[in-house]
Image 1 (cartoon, rainbow, N blue to C red):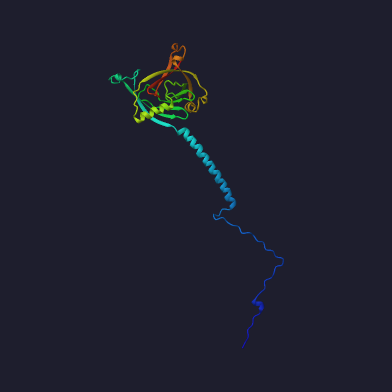
Image 2: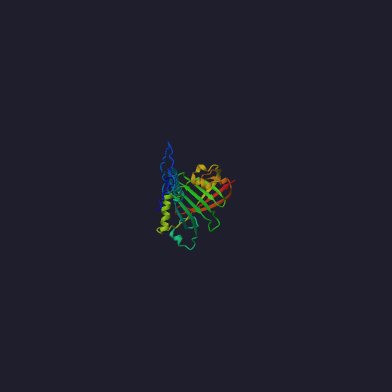
Length: 256
């Protein structure tokens, strides 16, 4: 029998020992579930908060802007009126000689600002100019923009002719609902151009937007201008419009 033996050195090799060796234990770095480091996540959250704040401010300011410029009552309507200078009566209305005209307007009422904006398109007849008109009850001013001349004219508001915005809106709502159908007539007023206005900023936001970058003049009613009978008119232009139960023909004349 043969006995086989193995060298213990070949069977197991002792590993060398390192003297004075120290082991550095590094704490385990925890990764967030979404893969974004904690520090970056905090920065991103702050940016998100600021972004939401700016978005909210934009919504508030945008809402205020939309309310100011679009939060208004709009109407498109027209009336028929007698061409002649007289108040309509039933007997005259039934007469075959009655001459009726019609006029249409785009109307916007800013009730909070107490302002009426009227746009008169090109009329069917040729003796009146298209125009944009602002009645500002806060500043007690009326401005006419003659679109044929591209000139602006400003005069103190005539509250005996122009209905206040609340009353005018009520009238338009009644007409729209069919509860009130006015029988209208025509009245005349004559204006005279006087001084030029160089700075329209002092006239308020609405009139300033209407007359910006346009020649702007003051108006006076003819009966209030002294010596007007001795001066001849160079040219006159008419604007027909309504802001009451009747139609007004505003004649604007330049003098020598």
